[in-house]
Length: 240
Image (cartoon, rainbow, N blue to C red; front, top):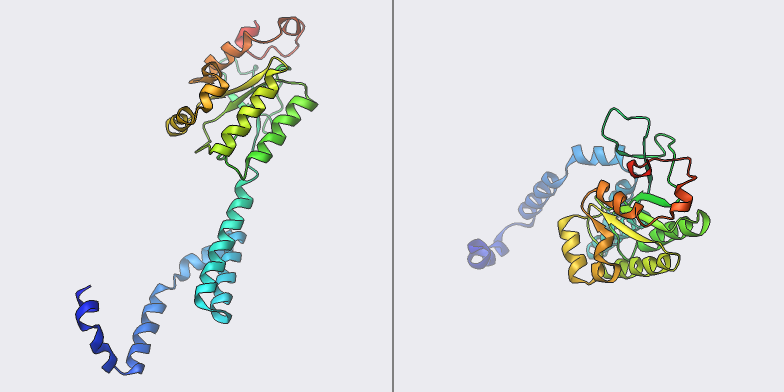
């Protein structure tokens, strides 16, 4: 800082060739060949950003090239996070010797409860992803006629206001069919925001649980017992 403030005027007397040499040396040291090779080998999206920014720097104004790189990064990020993975989970009743865990049914075909759908959202719920999540919930309610939906929320890093309002709307729609949205395993930071934004109040405190066993036990008491009596699945301990 002292050099810039006090000695900067003296740089006017430096030869341009010397200044050019310094700039080239600094620029060369900024090139990370190892990470560039990794980017080109393993990530198509980051390769696109790298090459776009590189050629834009060569053929366009430097400021515009930087803006283009940042904008492209944002667009690709939104495209990736707007369709989060929402796997369906169930319990492996054949594994009686161990503690029963929720398993992705894509990894192992398992019986499912005909009244309670258990899903996991593996990314944040925000304005960009909420449409995809709403479509998934609507498909469960309309096509499978399941109106009790338990969301395993351990993979959710944050929920914004748009996402919270949409989830409240979906919960109200499920309530019309005596169902509802339920959440288990919310992170403390997400739970704090949900409480401050009245998200928990609007959905109901009794829709949030700390453990999966507690969630299933409470939700089971709200299921239609006439359907339970003839259910062939019997995947929960409560079913027995």
